[in-house]
Length: 383
View 1: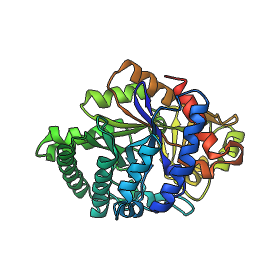
View 2: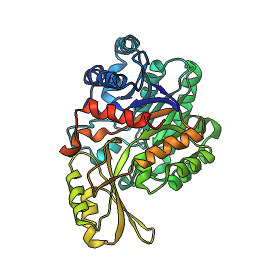
View 3: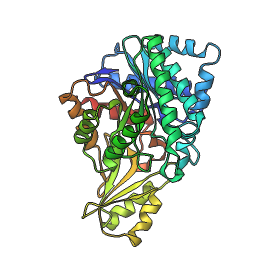
View 4: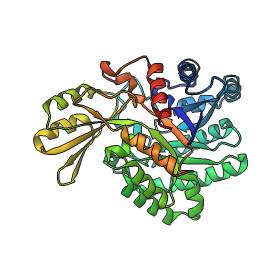
């Protein structure tokens, strides 16, 4: 849907769906119910076109382009006054009901399978995005640090993609762009590392302006809060460097004081076997210790005590604070919205992304459509 900063959707990666049939079923049921709940709360009129933040696995994407599935989906979107402006292309394979953890980074950008999948997503979004609206795809930042990946093929594949997307944009008349999503333990994870990576990438680009036009940042407010970065400052630094903010994910992480036993006990209820929950522990001297998963962070309480704050990569609802002594980093999402108000043209693609609904502790769970509608209310109340 349109809102003051551009287009707002929620990412459908919250719904378990790994093939096209189950993806469409999730959209036609859950997403349409969210649309009705948002409209019922008078945040938008019932006649307002509703945006779908599409997540497609490689399997679902390959099935969608077979036969007349894509044409039928376009017709269905029109019939529902709905549209697609962005696709989440980070999770390539299974994303629910199995141990995802580091596998969410596979295949990484050293593997041509990741490049081919992302090209297909761009062909799909180019067909789906309405005239006059730009289209985006988001992806991982190359690889995962523990893979010790060679950066050369990552840069080569991204620059090949930039050329492909630029040609596709020219052919279709759509402004298409990729958002690389910094995340803790990703190939680059914070603002300085992002700038350094793009510096190396642009050195190899035959046409740096073309690369910057098509390759940008998917700025996740949870991920940058985990780095103890303020949204306004980091967004300004990235844009001042000439980087495109392709999309902004509105999301929040857990925060706590690890010196409080009750806080640590409460955090342990978020330890679950599906997703990575990286921990960034800030010490009084400013040092930040990074742990790949919550159990690693918990083990560090004995080996590296003295942190003043922990931030844990577990996406929690924007509109519902965890019970004290746990806290939320949702202020970073509010700050990103406030910075956008002061910075016209910052980014036109915004997406609510709380994909962890299915593994939230019971006290934070609601019917999924009610949770998402609540997050819409929280966002729209701030614009």
